[in-house]
Length: 126
Image: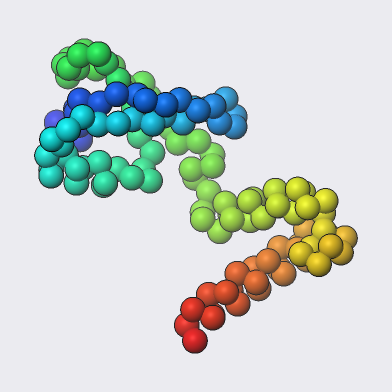
């Protein structure tokens, strides 16, 4: 294991929230005096998929057993595929209606919402 990739800092799990698909959201609060290098590493990990390890004491490299890890199918989707999936859920939640309360199939809803998103970004450019 590359020692540069292993980050160990004093921290406390302060909150656990149940999420969809039997997953958990962990809130981890670091202790004081986190070095700038450790802070930079943490910010570099933001949005990345990895393996989380926690121990009440320091973990020695030879004790660390990392399972074979493969990203889920969702992690393999492109951002546009993920957006389409979210829009599908919104369409279902709205009772298969568009923003004007008209019944429509998903393809019509999707195109309307994409136009709306693009229009909002075009306003930023004006």
